[in-house]
Amino acid sequence: MLPFRERLTLSQRISEGARLRMMYPMRIPIILERREKSTPRVSREKFLLHQEALGGELMVEVRRRTSLDERSALFFSCGGQMITGMTEMKHLHSQHQDPSDGFLYVQYGVESTFG
Image 1 (cartoon, rainbow, N blue to C red):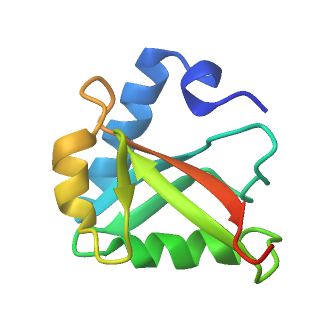
Image 2 (cartoon, helix red, strand yellow):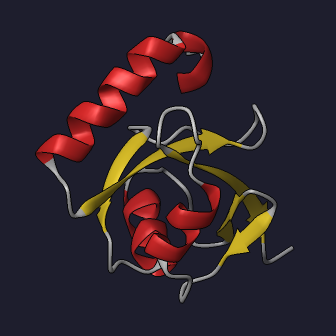
């Protein structure tokens, strides 16, 4: 499947972002992107997190939607900045949201942590 930015035109993304912000004004629209093609896919790419959510909540949601074993670690980044469990998503959104469509694009990758 093509990435979100390639699959939809800019006007479609702007429309979708505006629709989500109107329906859920207290939530942050997030698009999850794989860092590498070898990274397992997540069952969905769009997430809505409450403005007060921390990075750990995104990590839990994504882990639930993948088929990773417990020896694999998920890593998240946005705008070149690593997302930790205590990262405030509203702060990340205010700094790194896409200025054209308002989505926060988060990249994820997988590493084997035990050998």
